[in-house]
Length: 246
Image 1 (cartoon, rainbow, N blue to C red):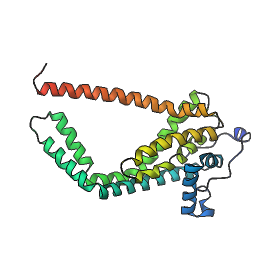
Image 2 (cartoon, rainbow, N blue to C red; image 1 turned 120 degrees about the horizontal axis):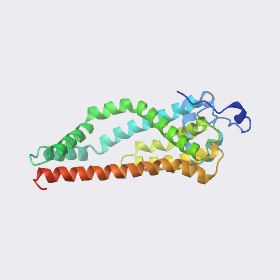
Image 3 (cartoon, rainbow, N blue to C red; image 1 turned 90 degrees about the vertical axis):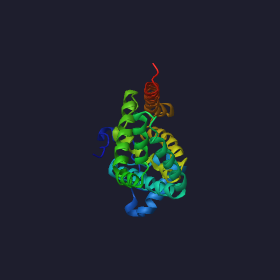
Image 4 (cartoon, helix red, strand yellow; image 1 turned 45 degrees about the vertical axis):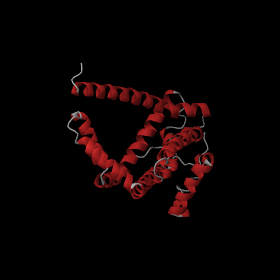
């Protein structure tokens, strides 16, 4: 489902962009349109978001899914080639640990699951599912961000504006192709670009845009902290039980 632009009455009061290079790829060419859009997103994000057209939701969806899918798959390939030795040694160590009869069954199952997830077949299967995962991630991120913006009274131009901001903010995920730290830097950059995108597409203040973007991540961090705490307590309980301790 592609987001619809805000009602015509609202759009009439707000200037419409001329279209990003990606939205004009029929004129510029596929690769040129994509490359110029990524360049603007990374170096001149304000200019990019000012040119966004809110009636081009399908194009924006395609940009995000294409960028995430291609560069995640490329990153997995490079990581497999560059870090193959280290990954094999880690798999061997985890395999020996999983065979330890003194290890709690729950921990053994967790280690075996980790071994399966790092196998070549699992990586290939995940790569094939990446477009679907990217699509779900994009809509979920846009929906949560828009809900928070609406609660704060900052969703001035409807869901289409939020969707466009979230879609083009995925441009830094080209860094998924860089093994190790690329994904961390890319995700942080996505958060910053999403805030800039909301500010421009909704015509709101920097503080309001930052609050709308950061609030969901703050809640997510709290939930993850509680989940990790619960998991550590559960593992400690299992370990103590395996040792016969009260």
